[in-house]
Amino acid sequence: MAADPRFHPAGPPLTLQDLAAIAGGELQGDDPSRRMAGVGPLQSAGPDEVSFLDNRKYAALLDSTRAGAVVLAAEFAPRVPVGTAAIVTAQPYLAFGRIAARLHPPPASKPGIHASAVIDPTATVAPGCEIGAYAVIGAHAEIGAGCVVAPHACIGPGVVLGEGCRIGPHASITHCLVGRGVVLHPGARIGQEGFGFAVTPEGRFETMPQLGRVILGDFVEIGANSCVDRGSQGDTVLGAGTRLDNLVQIGHNVRTGRGCVIVAQVGIAGSATLGDGVQVAAQAGMVGHITVGDRARIGAQAGVMNDVPAGQDVVGSPAWPARETLRAFATLRRLAAKPGAKAG
Image 1 (cartoon, rainbow, N blue to C red):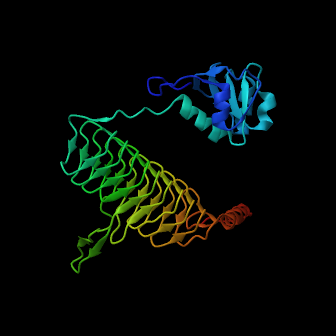
Image 2: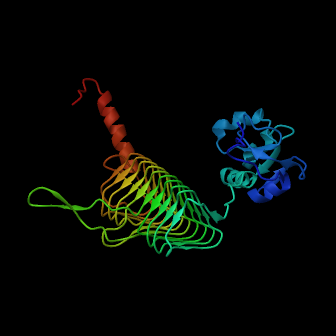
Image 3: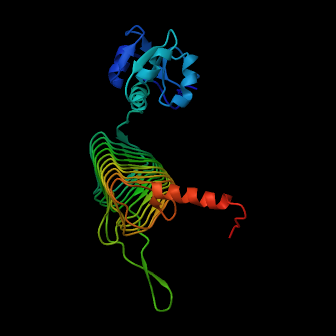
């Protein structure tokens, strides 16, 4: 099914020549002036829509596609049906994403402040911002040029947003300094008190003051209902370009490098440090006060309890280097398969 125009309106149609240039690819097999109006999957895209193939598992769908153009690698170009153009590129998924963004651009902001928004007189809102219904902006907050603050979002006192940020509906942000182009999806919670307490002699829990901040680098993106706690004494820092999926928990004083990817339901405990380009797969958990080196990869549901060297892949709980873990699993299966083996 193609993009529903009620939710994803199309922009102006573009020629195949334009689309090939956007993709950084080579156009093969059609009139360069032919125009495309949207995108769709291989099995349902129509003659005025663009599709893509990036996984050979779906190559059979290419033979019968009716798409007007398909973005794909050179090895699949000979299979493109007559009447379908090929846009050949080394990175089909990336190229298709760029085309889709041009044919279905995100809605433009509508500068202005809704009458129901509550903005403290000491706050600063730069020109070109869109402030939605019932949004709240606290004292001495600074909202950079071209920001969008969606309905019911809450920007706390003293928060600074760089230019071009998008704060989703019902998101809240406090005790935070934000770079350019940061995106918070609906319900994200940034800068709330971290989970820190001391135990009294009587066995009660006494909250430890959380006196730090959150620093979000340029172009950080945080998914729906994810939480980033502020630091206890120092700061919680997400490096430029880092992306959090939905339902991620980042504890106080965590620091990530640039371009980290942290997938849904990951929990990272306080004072853990991640290097540049670290990838953490879904439902992994990390204890506090450990270091994960640059470009390390943490497998899904891994339990990381020790430092991880740069470039290493770890899986399992407790997490071990991936090859060691796979060998251990293989050994365990062989033992279980031996005649007379007993469980327990």
